[in-house]
Length: 185
Image (cartoon, rainbow, N blue to C red; front, side, top):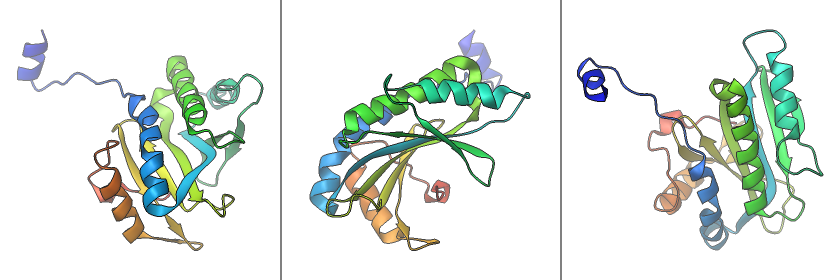
């Protein structure tokens, strides 16, 4: 049956994986050694709550309850209609943070909101100033790839740093090759 489908031009949909998101732990050491960056302990899951009335509220409840059972995630909305779930770990533990982000993604997907998920981010900052992220690693679930986003100022971005980070991490995590898909977050 699969062969017939491929002959007719049909493709099976591949379920996006969250495993590359967990692999981001391996990128922490090269980011610290090469750029003086460390995980801030914060990350987000971004989705668009669209569809039937009330679905957005249900998705927000599911996302808010995911992760750590003691702490609840913070839910915000932006001007573009996106819902942003912020997860954090005070001690900057990247492993626990990634587990929380995977849990949010997984619970939303299991509840039927997988098509609403846009991206997941993890922030990195200079060790001497952890309050201001200098680099955000963005994971696009539908593509299974990362891209770096390095904000500069209020509206700019440091494209040179982004390209250097991509080069440094290419063998460690799956990086998005098409820089046309690298969007600000």
